[in-house]
Length: 218
Picture: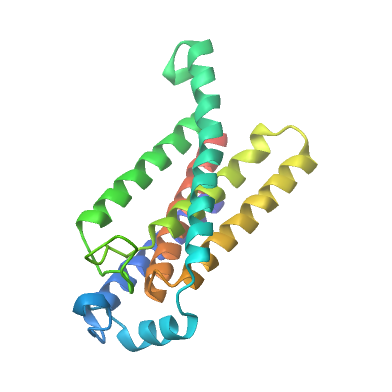
């Protein structure tokens, strides 16, 4: 129970940091440093990092592919769940861990739509083919890769019988997660605070999901 409470506590702290990041980028050091005169909070920090990093579209494309890979990895468990549903003929008989993972994916979709509608700030660059800046906070690809690769890594030990193979796949997930997050920053299509906000939100979701898995095992 204490371990479970610690996980939920960490989730609450991460979510509080996410809310704090929103407060900072909407209230502190607001500057018109984006394209078409768009503003962002912590503007000196964000612009300084963006100028230092530059824009590298190769990393943008690579992280897009990693996003597709994350969706594919999550899709494997969706297929497992569908197979169980067909064989067991009842949704309640599908592994509860897979149902929890499905709920996490639905929540990701809701969050994506929410921040497309509620714009905190805009990208530091105009994307190819676009005439107006796009919503940028939090970095949706950061959240997608972080949460899906992280959640899949948690699930692998229960669905891959060979422990060495499971451990190897978990390490691969972690490497892909790190490359996706760092690559998104290096790409230059997000402000630093977009990435930080995405990390805090992802950490909150993963800690809560980990707590749910722990509860299901109990």
